[in-house]
Length: 69
Image (cartoon, rainbow, N blue to C red; front, side, top):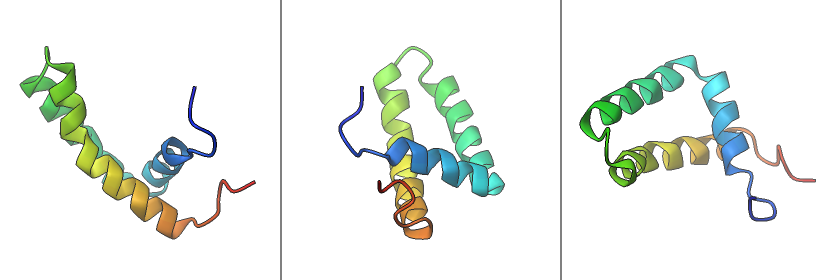
């Protein structure tokens, strides 16, 4: 369940689809974090937070109002 009108995951998904090089950078980060934090889920997740937040912000700027009903 997601909070009402929390579209961040959709914006993030769409940003990755629209920017293959950025998607590759994200994939590489995930692989490196998996190697480093294979048994530490919290550290793995924390390691992704900054890039996800930045990409989601850029997606919202590029696609304003995409998910506004």
